[in-house]
Image (cartoon, rainbow, N blue to C red; front, side, top):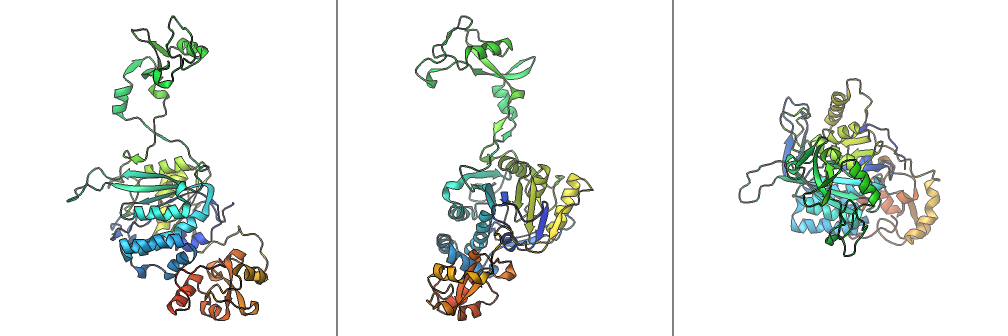
Length: 467
């Protein structure tokens, strides 16, 4: 699917509204570093590049649109059950936070290509709740990794283990088809000293088995004699390959006459990345990349994620882009990108960081405050022509009050209003009775459901067969 925005686009606004206007299956990689429900208020220090940036990470039901809760209850009963359980186990603050996250994760899932991946940065405060949400939205079989990032080396916490890590939840849109580029980190000095103990004119090397051992199988394999040596369990390479390695001085014979293969350090890729990241420190107070943004993450961390789960020219989206670390890393790696942030300061930070990073002439960032309009729904006829189909689909039941009506008493309505860029596609249409249509007006379907529940006309969580 083609994305309906230009590369290097940054939106200022509610990421839910913006994502709802984006084409489905148009993004290759999503990284998000949202609020953590940390019960803390953050602000950038005066005089820093991010001065003025602030956000509240304390959540109550008054902080979320009740319509979001209504939509989840109406369309995703399993998701609603998890949020309801979190309310009982943790309280209203966690419930509010998960409502805010769930409604956005549903849109992110829609935006990902079948080969796409999502990395959600969180901490232990809500990480386990977020994982259950994502198991429902993405499917538990599409959970790939829980990645631990050691964000600090020391912490003096009274009466508990020192809390020094964040969690990154890695999900694929399809566990068998997602993009994965094997990524390596350099060997540590200790590892080199321990294993690459030998040297010759080519450099450091370690000795590696070139013959088979009993643990590799009970029957001899590639059994032949070479320079008077016939291993009991056979060779690991064909004779021609062993001879070629020997001519290249890559075979070393021990004092006992046993052959080994030389593996040179400079020819090795390094250590494959692991799910515990301890080699990337947080952004220090004196780091060149530091902007002063309260929750800034290091470029090296985003570089590793983007290299592993995308290719050049892929589209990377950061819907909580803050100080734009993911966008800068994506741009360095020749990926296309888009970012969204509620604060207008994000636009200034993106421009400054990219110009500092890529040069003074780098000014082709597109700043938008509007909502994109989807182009992936095709040419659709006048929405009123779907009335018969909708009547059959809903079996004559009003999408609001859930009461059965004759055909002539139902009206075609937009589930997501046109004012919010709702389309005329049949998937965004339903039938409402006259009273429900009048009550809904230009509001969302979820707001209508809330009013109907409050008036006792409809039960909370009752399904909507029209959607």
